[in-house]
Length: 140
Image (cartoon, rainbow, N blue to C red; front, side, top):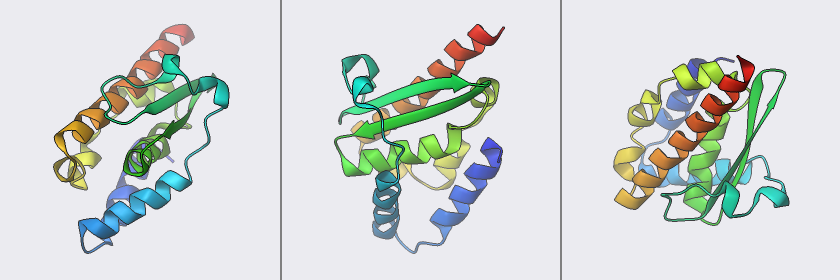
């Protein structure tokens, strides 16, 4: 599935819920299905700067496909990173670099987060894109 197809699916999933309490519950459930980060990556080298909560993110390139694992010490934040990993994992670095994050506005996520969580979301996206850029330069 392409990044835009996954984003469309997420937009449709969020549209099924009547209110933001249900959407938060859904995000918490998504967080529980997050690919587990290996313990050796759960240290300060992999922490995302700019997040209120602790968020660890690791990327690995295999066969020109980037895979992410992550964890967080906060349940909502874990749900947010789970959504981002669902969108950007198992994709080529160039597709990640070129992709839009408009779906976040389309589901209304940023406007329903506290300012510090919204900043954290931006930091998560930046870190994912930085990994993609770093790996893309290795492919050239």
